[in-house]
Length: 456
Image (cartoon, rainbow, N blue to C red; front, side, top):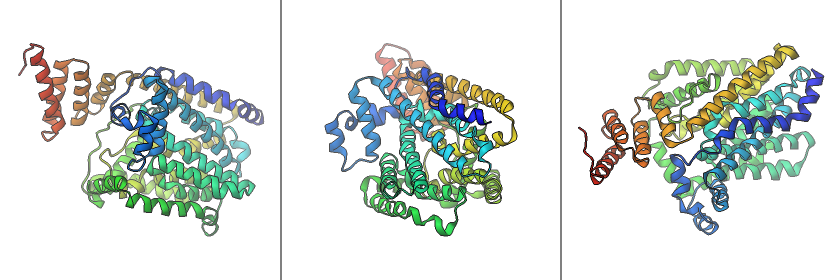
């Protein structure tokens, strides 16, 4: 085991770079997709430095838009954006590796668990659920925020270890601010620090003291969000989507779906058919799952703190925030990008404890090969907008928005009959989906202009 530890530590950067490049090489040729047009292609504020600066007073997520501006001004088109996403994913995988190393060192079984850090990082690099945050250009909102979030956590951990006050009270909150400027869901950062402290043997009474400045930053950020017209409008629109009880049921159902995607990642879906529920009685099984995981988190804190930490981290990032601020899209896979890596680490640590070196290598190889294969296959779905929405329509055949989006992709490709079929299907599924009705009129108009005949 010692030999593997030395070997994997020295070659970790090589392995991480190699697997990421191999798994995502076929993602570099993908075009702009769906939301990419709203936030990048048709968004003039990211097309020049002057426009980006001018939009700062009234815009949201300025750092995310800054990254889009960098890629846009480089002039490499969609390929440049994909390269940017790939670099971000490489950085995040390295951060996961370093955090996994630090976490393992805090456990009393650390000698046996040394291989777990690299295995967890490679699983993070290759997990197919992460394609939405890496291959889908707009998924950068999750991946770039994760970069600053994990960098802030690593800075905090190293500062605590070396008693570096500058890193603790300056660099860590600064990285927290950068994460917030990328995506506002980074507000969970102080709680994530608390989860780390408790997962590494810390106590409630002393855990808050070294992180007080991050709670202060969170307070200032909260004041900024509720006084900003841009953010306040988004929050008000979100709060009107559902009742608190209905939203609890909806989010628990979404949480169960995400856990399934992490454990059995054979069916990725960019727009899953997850309904808005009205009461907790509609989500009894997800409620039982959440309660069971909560109990497991509490009971495992002393015997298996890595499992307790992983469950606390996942539930922190997937449930509470969306209870207060519900969303139209109940769940999407990019949420797992930040939420899931401790679960991958816990799995890796358990395998390292249970298996000898040879068997661990075999199991790890099978898992990584399976993840890499699924990721390569999933990247092919992003090869065109038609391919992406055809795949989504197969997996969510009863969702009107999916058929409308597929029809729109057909319409852009001048495949009018197929577009018309999808718009009609969308209207049958949801007669109040006005976008589908408008798109159908637009399609019929183009067919008539081309001298074609409309089919009933």
